[in-house]
Length: 365
Ligand code: MRU
Image (cartoon, rainbow, N blue to C red; front, side, top):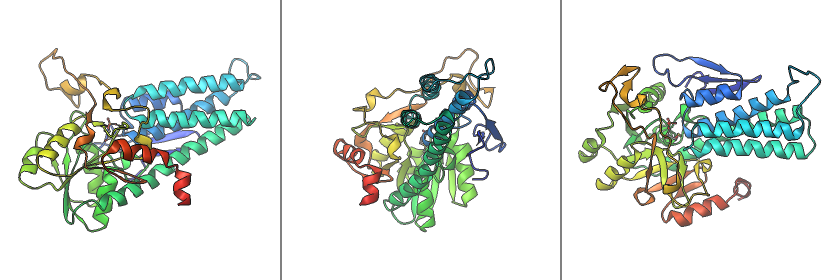
């Protein structure tokens, strides 16, 4: 989409405010890690890989701030230990904003490792800042390459003239570009193998209806928007050949946390014998978690349920629950598509194998 959803130059992170789409395409400038954290909390940037990339730029912005002369005492600069402590504080605060998507804490820890390595090598704060900006850019660029690889591998799993159902938004807005589940849809379309896309509206924040339709329309891919209550109806009629979704965190056994409503789709897909496919980069796998029961589910403001676009849709004082994600058990998942290939059950075996393969070793193969 245009303008690019995320762009970093000269110490400014420019983002398209996703909370305004499709009413307005508004670019917001973020100049500090706190502004990045606020934008992530307000869902101006969302989607697991995209918030990882934003988190990486957030750490780079924190480093710029720590490297500046102190206002009270311009001669004084942070020592490497103080600098790292300030950075860690910013990184921890950024990672805590949205706890379910592991890409955010993954990107922050990649950035912290880089900062530590640079200081240990005796680099000056200015050199560390430059290295962190380059690292954040690399995380950003890698993500688009990753999505294209996921797209190609996943499209090959779909039948010809496929009619695919997707949930939430997993495209340009949610990633470094191209998308994960939406990358598969894009690749299938470019290969002439896609008939149409059913887009779930994705209550409560309507990422499907606001963002996915926006992207598909931009690309000229045929789609039909449906309410979250309609997939069973269309599956029963034989109108859906595959369900393709993204992921926010994948446990070692293949349990997948993704946007609330995903689990229900997986159950429906099983009942109707439709392949349920998950698309995610390696940065979405959490090797520290044995199964989905350990995944923290972000609980968001009840107002997102009781109000639509600021207008009340429930009796005054109504209490509402608002878990932003649910966990789909591995047994319901037909395949997990990554940039390093397609994983199949038993995931207890295929996931650790994937995690052991380093990108360097892949490149040498
Ligand atoms: O709450 P959101 O909009 O950040 O949730 C997004 C999703 O659940 C996506 O499916 C997931 O992050 C994968 S995006 C490639």
